[in-house]
Amino acid sequence: MTFTLKIWRQNGPADKGRLVTYQVRDISPSMSFIEMLDVVNQQLTLKGEEPLAFEYDCREGICGSCSLVIDGVPHGPDRGTVCQLYMRRFPDGATITIEPWRAKAFPIIKDLVVDRSAFDRIMQAGGYISVNTGGAVDGNVLLIGKDQAETAMDAASCISCGACVAACKNASAMLFVAAKVSHLALLPQGQPERTKRAKAMVAAMDREGFGSCGNQYECEAVCPKSISVRFIAKLNREFLRATIEEPSPLAEQPADPHDESH
Figure 1: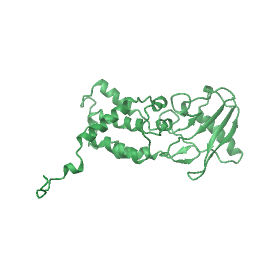
Figure 2: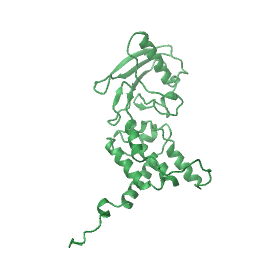
Figure 3: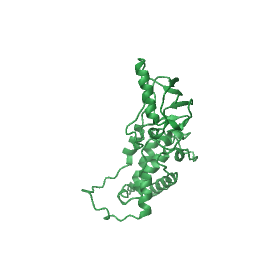
């Protein structure tokens, strides 16, 4: 198979960047998209040119690090990760445009690699439990209903790839934050910090510069793990609950006995 590739090249965050056209030939239909990019880099190296910078890790559809926008769609035409997208999905002779995630909170490092550490900082704000559980306990010590456990697992399946951000016209991280908040809010282990977690993670998301939710479901449409937008509704309820239940700092201050206004 033969393809014309229009690939985003950018030397660093300060570089303007541009689309560069490459021709690739003799591509096997059974190659994954990432393997096809390996062929491109091999050709560039043999020519003495700078190879493409792109990210990958497991190549098994697990890690989500292969973050590319292919023909305007995060991860390409199939719902899944780029390493599980095969070249037979494209017609022979097709022109394919390849770009990085486009979001203020995901600055470009080089070419197709972006800095997604904003997600790490959101997780550090509250995506954890601090209960000391000691050693591994028996699976039936904490009784959790089947529906509750499965819903929590659905939320926990988020791989933090950032496709939801790349698909949203506002570059919102609501689906990611909603999945992380919901999965712990549904389990007994997450209850002690439930109130603090929702407020802290939403605040961290805002600090990172992500946009607001547009309620157009692009995030759900491209999520490789099929995370439902219903978790965004769950996040909104958790945040409202936290706002109501957690007293404000002013409410916690004792009244001044000398203040005649009381």
